[in-house]
Amino acid sequence: MKIHEIIQERNFDFHSFIKQYLSEIDDHIEKCEKCHDRMIGFSRHLPKLRARVTVEFPSAESEAERTNQLKQLQRGQCLPCGCEVIRPSWTLAHAAAKFYKALAEIEGKSEEYVRSLPDDLPFAEMELETKALRRLRDKFWIPDGSSRSAEQRDLEEGEKVLQMPVTIRGFIEKLQNINSGIIYVQCPDHWLP
Image (cartoon, rainbow, N blue to C red; front, side, top):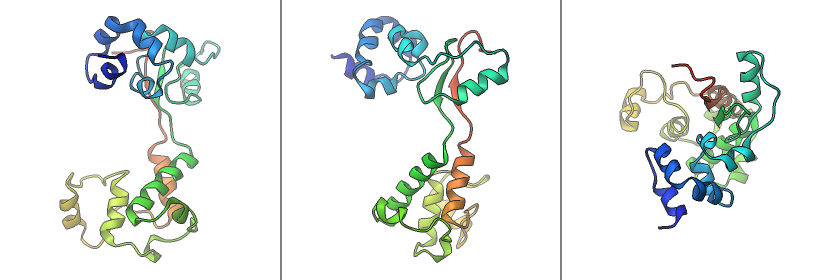
């Protein structure tokens, strides 16, 4: 079996897997973006990858300074210590791209069309049914205390869509706010049990 297939099929115990296939993985992910994406979070175990994705910053003097450095990194990049960003915070442009893609799917229209809509357009003025608006919201968040079942949420909410921003701009800003934090793997020096 080729290393590409082995990486794609692996779903658990990546540490043992990396020990067994270290050089093959490290060489392969240099050329294959799809496999590199699967190995994000494990760069400290892969020397060639770590050398490529490390962003050189001066040694942080405080936890706040290290956190600020992490906020400047993209997905898969790491600090010299080994702390690696798994998911960076969303920019407004990133939130907008995700929103327009989801709206285009919900409406069954092109992204070009939905991007042409004014961002101060209220959802109430759009020709979307309540269920469609709910599905748009559900792609990104489910209100606190709501059922995990879409059908049950339809019954609970009736003709309302809870926590639905009024305008397109409001929705995009809420998306950015919801995804404002970063997710990262701490290196052994900074890991606290």
